[in-house]
Image 1 (cartoon, rainbow, N blue to C red):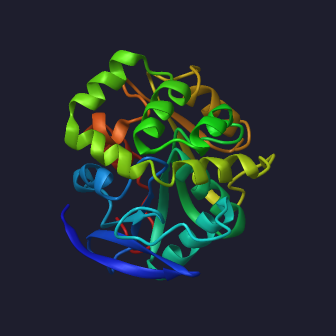
Image 2: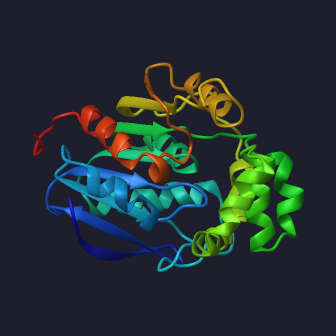
Length: 264
């Protein structure tokens, strides 16, 4: 599936862009990336999909060419932004990854959504221990902190990332809203129940992270709050599935596509 166009949407005092793939008039999948990611990083997943007539990839605030996070940014800001997208496009389902997964699940508390798919969603107190360091960190240091102190990778992993100059520069750029987003995540009390207005919820965990901190344990915290969800494991994958296994994730998403009016 190829990208059809990019659209800019006004959200509060800022704006977001969305990349639209396939038939923009057909109901399909809205994709919400998380922290340290953007719409461009999720393009390989969007292109791999075949069971969805359209895919709308949200480029959340703080990522070019979308606008700034804005004053007073909270997790609520993200839920409202997703609401604007869902009011603009006829979405049959919403896929959220990591922080985006929590955004999608919270949105399904407020409005009916046919299907929510969340890959390793995170929830408070995720990454809270790293906030003091991140508050004063520049982009280079912030990328190191998120990989070492939050994701738990070793120094060799960070050295390998640094060796790819273009890739490291992209990570530094994506780290700019990191502190504010992580602070917003941890400032919001964790609800006892999530996604009660979703007809169907599919929670996905990578096989490498099952029951392992930090992503597997945060996944379990979310799972307990969505008792009606179906749980799926994607063998051999970790948190960065959109970079390491986009076709494998695409295959699972195609398998999870639920036929609905206007989509077959």
